[in-house]
Length: 256
Image 1 (cartoon, rainbow, N blue to C red):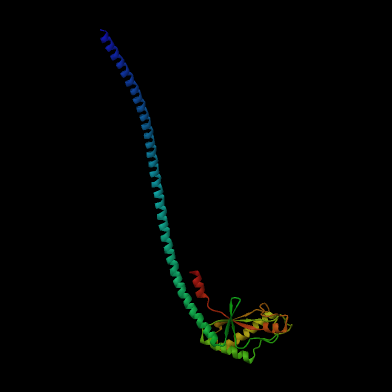
Image 2: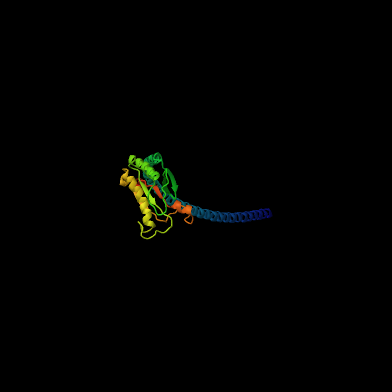
C-alpha cells in the first residue's frame, strides 16, 4: 500500500512539473507572436508609405516629362523660326553682295577714269578729294583761272564726257581776308561761290553735261592751312574737286 502511495506521489509531482513547463512555453510563444504581429504591422506601414511615395514620384515624373516635352516642342518651333529667319537674311546678304560687287566694279571704273584724266584721289575726313595736275589756286580776291588751270580743267572735261556716270562737286574756298566794299562780290561766301562756278562753267563750255557737276562756296570755313601766314592764306585760296558718286544703290542695300 505504501508503495502505491509513493508511486502516486511521484506521478502527481511529475504532472505538476510538466504543466508548469507548458504554460511558460505558451506564454513565450504568445509574446513572440505579439512581437511578430507588431513587426509585421510596422513593415506593412512602411510598405504602404513606400508605395505612396512611389506613386507620388511617378506622378511628378509624368508631370516633369510633360513639361520637358512641351519645352522641347517650343524649342523646335523657335529653331524652325530661327532657321527661316537665317535663310531670309542669307538671301538678302546674297543680294547685297551682288549689289556690292556691282558697285565695287563701278567704283573701280570711276577711279580708273579719274586716274586717266590726270587726277589723283585723296581721302580726307571721310570724303574723296580729286587732285588735278595743276593746283586750282588763286591770287587774293580773284576767281579767274590761268591757262595751265584751264588746260587741266579741259582734260577733266574730256574724262567726264567719256564717262557720263561720273559726277563731281566743285568747292570754292577763300582765306580770311575781308572783301573790300564796292567790288564784284559782297563777301568771301560770294567769292568762293564764284571760284567754284568759274570751273563748272569751263567744264560745261567744254561739253560736260550740267547734270555731272555741282558747285558750292565754302567761304573761309574750311581752311587747309594756317591763315595767320602768307603761305597759309595762299593755300586756302583754292577750289577743290570732290567725287560725288551715285548713292542710291548703297541706300537700297541699307534698307534691305
